[in-house]
Length: 382
Image (tube, rainbow, N blue to C red; front, side, top):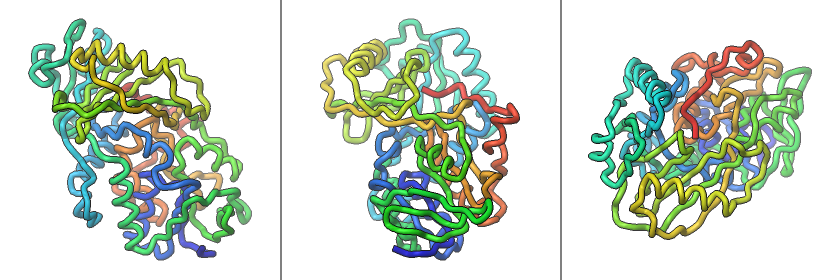
C-alpha cells in the first residue's frame, strides 16, 4: 500500500469511483480509493438504478440532466469493453391527487426551463404508453422519454477500470479508522492497512459519511434509512418505462433480463442502519404494484433485499468542501438518487478538490445551507 497520495477517496460506490476517475483524468498523479468492503457493496449495489431528470428542484434537475447526457456516451469515454446496459425507456410519474397534479405541472415548468423534455399525459395517453396499467383513480402523469435505467455494477466497474488505467490505486477491505489533522487541515487517513499521508480527502461513503465527518469534529445532517427492493422472475416484455407513484410510495421497472424491479418507500421507517428485509415489505409491495399493474399478479418473486438511503433534511445532497477542515470534502446525502447523479458529481468534485473552476457553481449544495435555513426541499423522492 502506498504511504502518500495527492488525494484519497473514501467509498467504493459509483460516486467514489467516478470521483477517483475524474481526479486522475484531470492530472492528479497519486489517487487512492479506499473501500471498507468491496466495490458496490453499499448503496450502489443495492439501488434500483433508475435514472431520471424529472425532479422538483433545480439542483437535482441539473445534476440528473447532465449525468444522463454523460451516460449516453459513457462506454466510449471510459473505453469499457462491455455494456453498462443504459436504456432510455422513460419514466412515468403517476398523479393520484389534485395536489400532485399541481406539483407535477410546476415541476414540468421548471424542467422545461432547464431543457428537460418532460410532458403531461392524460390517463388515456398513459394507457397508450403502458397498456397494462390500471388507471383507476389516476388524474394523469408526467413522462420523460429520456429517463431510463442502468446497470449499477457494470457502470461502477467501468469507472473503476478506467480509473485503474489512469493509475488510481483501489484498496478494498480497508477500513478508515481515523482522519488525522495538522492544526485544522487534513493531513492523511489511518486505515486497518496503515497510514496514507495526503492533503485532500473526500468522503463518498453514503449513509456512513456522517461517522467519517465526526472523525474531524464535524456533525453532518446525514441519516441512514432502510429501503427495500425485490426482483421477479423474467417474463416477456410487458413494461417500457419506470412507473413511479409517490402516492403509493412505489416504483416498478422491467429490467433488460426481463425481471421486474420493485421498490417501496415507508414513511414510518426508523432512521438507523437496519438492513434486514421483511415479509411486510413483500406483502405491501405486491398489493400496491398489482393494483397498478394487475398483469403481474402471477409473476413469482426471485429475491428481495434492502439498502440504505443517506438522507438529509431537505433530501438534497451535500457537495463540496467542509469549511472547518481544509482539505476535507463530502459528496453524500443523495437521499436515494446518488447513482443517477454520479457522472456529473464525480466531475464536479474532482474540479473543486483540485482548485479548478467547476462546470457550474455548487454552493447551493453546501453544508452551510442547513444552518442558514436555505434548504432545497426535494418533493419527488420515494
